[in-house]
Image (cartoon, rainbow, N blue to C red; front, side, top):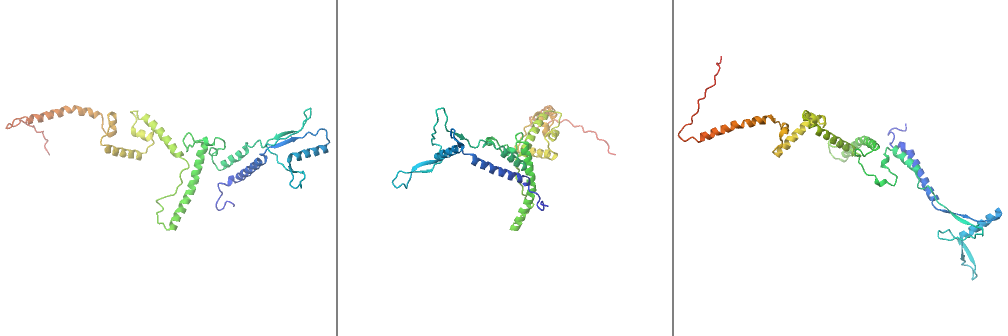
Length: 330
């Protein structure tokens, strides 16, 4: 079995596509180099010449165009002209005779490669390769607007479903690799002589994107919005609303109460009024009875003032107190 003992690589499905894409890139490069220069078409007027004479005439014209006449260096004092190769120049002029009826030679330009900008076949293999690697196509733009795409970092409502699936795939790969890397790293530390408890740390990869963070933030914002609306209803318990609409557990609610008490004691004064007094264990109905009892407290203070104004030597008159009847004990 070719899969034993290491299994199949994650690149097994895209190896063939990668080789095809590589060959296509080479073919496109060769085509661009070969078809890039422009060519000229020389239409030589041969009149009514026979075919063999016409070909000889065209060959002579071609040699004249590709040759340049220069004075020879070894003429021995005589006027002699030599011919050398003359490549066609873009700034060179050409002269051809034309008859009275308009017949004559002409030159046309044969343009180079016309489809150099069409790389749809290369895009196809590129997309096929990215799909084999499970990479979203939005990560590999090939158009001129490549730099105009903003980074979303997994933001809810902006990221694509392909990006979310690729994020999940990367996390699965990280979970499989992190366990083995953690074991190997701890073994390496022991081999190097570091006496470190292996249970106090664990090697993990950073998440590819913040999908979970943005998702939790969006969920918390919606829960807080709903809780703010439900809190205004007097017939719904605040503790029940925190558990039902905020999604808090009993332990989280208890911890929140403890922290709230600590912060309140640190501030020294609890600023609660009206119906909010129930949150700290005070019933607003008891406030009225406290106000009524203020009159009795004032009378008691007046009695104390009266006793203090009695002249010295005169004992205050204290009314006799009738003891309460007691029942016989059997």
